[in-house]
Image (cartoon, rainbow over all chains, first blue to last red; front, side, top):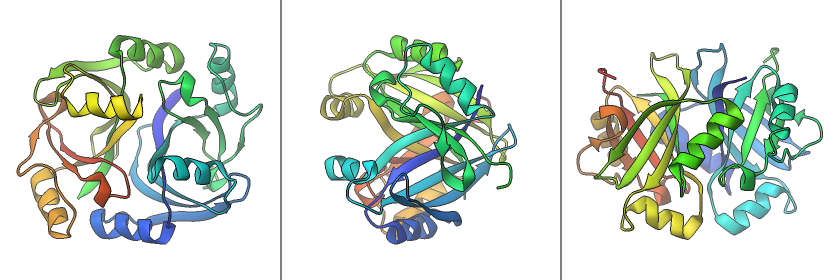
Amino acid sequence: MLTRIDHIGIACFDLDKTVEFYRATYGFEVFHTEVNEEQGVREAMLRINGTSDGGASYIQLLEPVREDSTVAKWLAKNGEGVHHIAFGTEDVHGDSEAIRGKGVRVLYDAPRTGSMGSSITFLHPKDCHGVLTELVTSNPQH
Amino acid sequence: MLTRIDHIGIACFDLDKTVEFYRATYGFEVFHTEVNEEQGVREAMLRINGTSDGGASYIQLLEPVREDSTVAKWLAKNGEGVHHIAFGTEDVHGDSEAIRGKGVRVLYDAPRTGSMGSSITFLHPKDCHGVLTELVTSNPQH
């Protein structure tokens, strides 16, 4: 069951400048940064609020680290903006398989590693009214 | 001070079909619907989770009700997808004026009426790394 908005993923050309915009404009601070080599991105997580399921909602800022990453291609086509949205669940595997069974394309055969050691998968935006949609199960060690 | 992700605004061509997609795929139910004549949209709010500031986070589905609305023009250019993101605050007027003072264009001279009697304004996406950003103060009667 999806129990929260986990994050909004925003693609940007320059992570440091975009982090500084969010800090200076809104007061949002960086909670975590990492490079996800598999996804080809450098990212910053800004924690915005806690959620009623015991988790939290973040803004995730994403800068591509290689030109063949999906985020680099997306930026070249669309410019900066909202790249995806993510819902949190305790069971990304079970929920994504149930959604696959409803005819929505799930992009990975099995969940992969996302921010802060989470398990993630994505749903095809063409099956989701134009919205690239991620499902996330947090790593409790974070 | 911005204390939550209030909602993610998603533009769609057919509100009823999109509401049904979110219900059938994720189990999200409609919390509220209304027509906002000023914004030129018919909308459905899906409540996803409560937030640590005492508010909530929603998915807001938006269908234009007239061809000259900004959402209709946006859909014609972009197709369905994430139209804007919104942060919640107790003081949309004060926060938006402070942000205006930092050089970010605020689209309204004074806040207008948003979903469920809230007070809202928008920040220019070109000043926000490509993200149309709304600030919202909820109406406590909702």
